[in-house]
Length: 335
Ligand code: SF4
Ligand code: SF4
Image 1 (cartoon, rainbow, N blue to C red):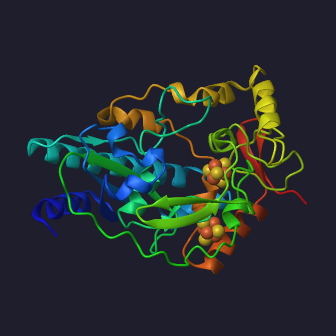
Image 2: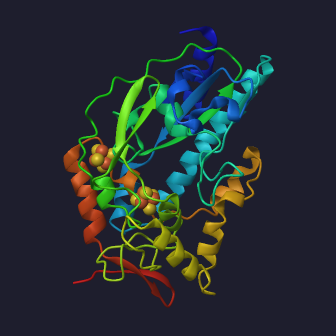
């Protein structure tokens, strides 16, 4: 490994990053447009991918609706950790005379795209896959051999020419259990339909996702159930009665009708997510402190071991529903 890569890896490890990988503009040439490093840095040659694992016990307590906040705090902390490492690597590279840019781990989208296309400036997933951190599972999330999909990712783009790591050999760790699809309240992840994507010389097949707003609305907390009768929910007590997959036009009409209701301020904010104004990365702390996680189920259930994944799904779907109580959200089991 060359000296600069060693230095970057050491710095990231000291901050608590679990996995570090390197890739190049060239390696990402076959990826979809959001894998283009030059969109964020015209002179980009390489990218560094950082991954931090989430706490497993906090995930189980979250899925089983015992405790929302332990995972929320852990997830926020994981974002802050990749941000801290990203900024430190950016500074190191800039001090050496290279251009470098650390990106937000989430919440940032390209401007001037169709309504709610939600294209990130750079896909951390494609960068991570090209950098050998993991491979794309059926959910479209990055699956690592050690932590499954339960990682927070961030990329740093640079003009430095760094030797790329080998993308992981495609292994059959995603066994197509479809528990990610079965855990999604928004019908965003299809259990049946698939689509193909190339990244760094490998061909992946993952689910054919529905309209991005289906995840945005449910993961953002404006909907917690598949339908009004659902026996389980996310940590959101909101009910939008979303149409089932296959009719995204109807879905958008339904969502926009709900957004008109005075009570649905959160939904209005989410539908305007592409115009969210983010602070500079160095001021991310107060922004992150306001984040309350209600879903993320597709990644949280996806652990490497199938039996553990089944248990995660069981915990999610047998732990009842969150409803609005007088003092705030309460969990109720439905018979
Ligand atoms: S939950 Fe199952 S199907 Fe979905 S990505 Fe994980 S291993 Fe693959
Ligand atoms: S985060 Fe939640 S709503 Fe979004 S795709 Fe995953 S399971 Fe579905």
